[in-house]
Length: 262
Image (cartoon, rainbow, N blue to C red; front, side, top):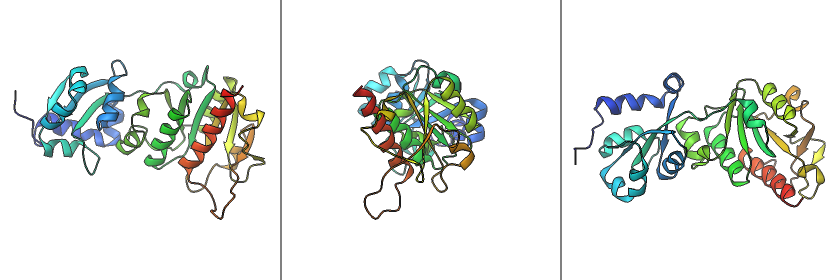
């Protein structure tokens, strides 16, 4: 067995550059950190370019090693330099970008999540995970949303980034119009919306794209007004509101349940 590569190795240093958004965009490559993410990436044909792992992780994740197109041993310091985690799990994959044109993601779906100007990578990744768990057909990150391939976004998705179609659209209006053109009603999650979320409502049973806004200021009025309905989640206690990822989970599950009861 060859000796593990060190943090000073040229290949490791070149791979480390993928922590920068400009480098990811230029090379259309990103890093998937941890066994769940690597497992998800390996399930997508042609997605994984190479996997870096420590000797201990190679033994622990032998099935991943067998499935990887290229498996490279690195020492603990080299792996830590590639990982975004405080406690690295010992395995990081170099992956090709996954996003598709927005029209392809919106077409032929029953449940879609659109994030407009969602800046926090943890929130974006969690919305992707919630959409996956609710059985949604895709996610669109629109406007000035965080980079889908930010290591924190990928890690927060816990592998779901690889499970469902993803689009990246600079203009949120284009994302909303694409969903409507595909026959989806667009429901804007809005704390001041005129419609109260009711899981028993027939409204939720229709093919739907949920539109979620920025963590701090929500949706711009002009964007929310493009939606077919503005829907608020009822608050029964004293909390002022729900955070974005929790609100997304509530809305997506309400629609998923209504659609399955049809």
